[in-house]
Image 1: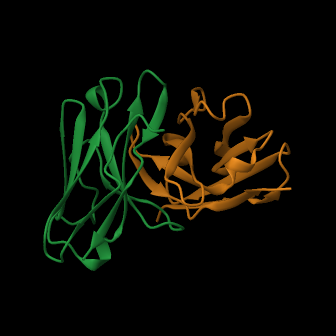
Image 2 (image 1 turned 180 degrees about the horizontal axis):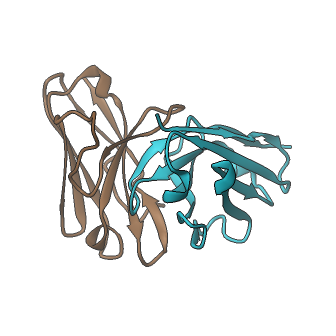
Amino acid sequence: QSVLTQPPSVSAAPGQKVSISCSGSSSNIGNNFVSWYQHLPGTAPNLLIYDNSKRPSGIPDRFSGSKSGTSATLGITGLQTGDEADYYCGTWDSSLSAYVFGPGTKVTVL
Amino acid sequence: QVQLVESGGGVVQPGRSLRLSCAASGFTFNSYAMNWVRQAPGKGLEWVASISYDGRQKYYAESVKGRFTISRDDSKNSLYLQMNSLRAEETALYYCARDKFAGDLDYWGQGTLVTVSS
């Protein structure tokens, strides 16, 4: 049972936009940076967003991140079939002294 | 280019031990904190442990405290995870990941599979 909450799945047609929420508390999201990862099971996860809203080099600006209070959001615009994957939020939890991942959200392109 | 290559996975009986290794290259290993993350079949990512750049600070998920030990050998650019008293539910693909800064896991290996079964 994760201390972070994400919707199990989101879907949209190609070219559309999806938003994935990640809800936590003051011990994690509220006082620490949030990262987002794209993952195809069996492959290496890929860092999409760090420090709440920054993109590593090579990540297209179709991916965006934001944070407000104890929640964070990943946005994907111009949805492509190649975006079908599992997406995880992650952050440090100061109370647990542990890094925590959300349960993951499966993105389906209709 | 940054490369992380895990090894040491395999089939092990419940209650036994296994040591995973992660060979790093393409960056100054002793400047970065490192992590182990696992994914059990059909489950999400689960953080296991992290070690600071200088090896002085180590953190563990509650589920592995007292049984797993993370360590590093900067002379060999290598990260390790000693896993004792393994349980069936710890069957998973184990990844090592570099920590760019304060929990930004920016590079990951391809993982090594650990199967705990009698």
